[in-house]
Image (cartoon, one colour):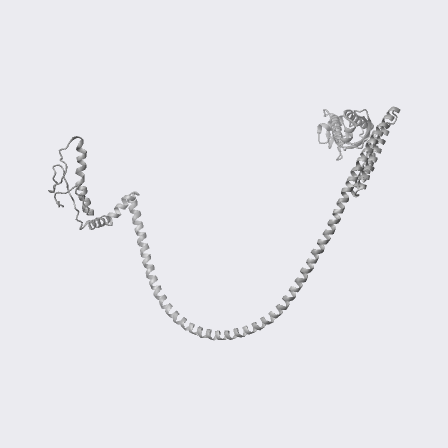
Length: 491
């Protein structure tokens, strides 16, 4: 055997064994050396179609047609190695691989179906498919296979176990009966009066017939006793239905009377509605006639007013033209006079402007001087404030001294008190004589003990009475106090 270089296709792998390889080697392209052998495996998925026979928990057999798309798990290296070891020697279309896959699927499907009722299998097809898919996938993992797609077809009856056929017949009968019921209900809704209850009666009869047929079909092959029992039940049911029909007829008669009353009311209402509509239409016609007459009168008055308006406009235009010409003449004279006044005013304005410009220039220079002096004064004050280390009180005192403020204040205070002649009175009450020679009637100063405070009050009264007399001219009564001397020395 010579050395060769082999390349696999896109959906294939090379499986190489032999010298220098411990187990097996998978590659897309490789050199096959002496002492080595190579095999090509196809990893594309294959469809497997078969029917699985299973039995539900109620011992009902059924066929499960299924199509599984299965192939090696190409994205997992370990799964590819397991597939190459276990199944690469067989053709995937061979019965060996098909039997292997079918055996796994049948086993898991039967186990799962045995734990479910036929109703659960039939109604939960999606969940059933999902569980079968998951359980089969767990078994296929050991062979390195992957389920790419699983399609479970409609369940099929096994010969001798026509469950789905009977179920279909039941559904068809129920659909037919339901169709009859729907037709009866439609007729019942579309008809008024007696047709309503007739439809209900037909519906009930159809329902009884359907139930009777279902019971007779299910009870075929049973004994005579069961058949008689069914007939008795049917008879009882018919009697009950007859009672219901009688009750329905009575109710129908009641409703007919009510409907007749409603019909009469509707007829009366329709007559009244026609009369009301006629009155409304008549009112609209009268309103239209009145509106037409109004428009006609408006047109006549408008035409007359238009002619009078045109005449008045022409007359007004002539008067306006005459006044415009007179006003234009007056305006021309006024314009000429105004032009002369304007020239004179411009000359006066120019002279005043020159004088104002000169005064403005002087004021400007004066303000610039004041600004310069203020700036210099500000620099001077900032320099003094820095010299006093920011002490505003010291700066204020310095500026007041330097500006002669204290001297001015002293002069103002002196002028304020100049010419005043104060009047001063001195009183002594120790020995009954005042310091200026006045004699006052007072308590002797030699009083001591508890009467000392009373004596002090009496000593205070003479100067108080004198001050009141000097300020207001009022003299105390003689019984209260008198002065021995009419005048006192004042200084």
